[in-house]
Image (tube, rainbow, N blue to C red; front, side, top):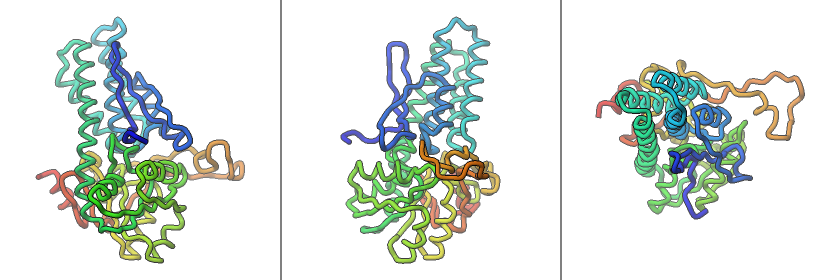
Length: 354
């Protein structure tokens, strides 16, 4: 692929513009962008995982707010109707997925922008909100590159790095968090090999991480989730780098289901376990990971995949989408401003006092 992977891209038009989201439910078989022009549409794209990954969800939500403002500029509505519609857009986006805190961070930022410019005309406000969404988009790429640079220094040349789920360009505005660390290490001249967990049940590792690495000719080996312990026991993994959807104030980390098991295995085998994330993913209002809401998704994601169903009809199913890894299992949290080794309440708070 000649161009870098873009999960999200904005398209300007004479009427204002629209958002395109790469449909990640169809990768790697089909490379297809879907067009969005409303908050409800973006919310459904987030809910159905057309777009996924905490930073990308936040950027998409910011554009969703701008799109709703632009949409209501096209109709003959008074300021009260416009404000009510925008409020509804915020609520619809906020209800799309509960765990990724970047969603709420981005919506809060867009609401502050709205309130700050409330005296503008509808057209002016829509343009201001779009400008803010574009800035959030561009800033996420800058942040990811800073995370990558900070994390690359932790990986030795020749490292075999296990990652779980997908925290790459597809999960962000570009470059990635966990895969951004790997990309930056490779750019610095290090020989890195990726071991990608398939990441059941939605197969983000098999479908997305492996695909991203293949596009960039970064060596990658795909394994099933239950092979990770075997690989560690046989000395075939040197480090683990994962992303996260929310980090509590004490350093507890919520990430894709199965991450906790990887962290326990890493501790058993004395392998460093790194978490890469922007500051916007850290939720200092929660004292521990036990307060992080865990999304339960549809049973169909577990009983089969697409048209292939392998589970017995009528079986009970649990499908929590995330689990929480306690801070004591985390070697370091890699952010755009610093690397926090052995995170705790004090060291996490220090990130926001620099």
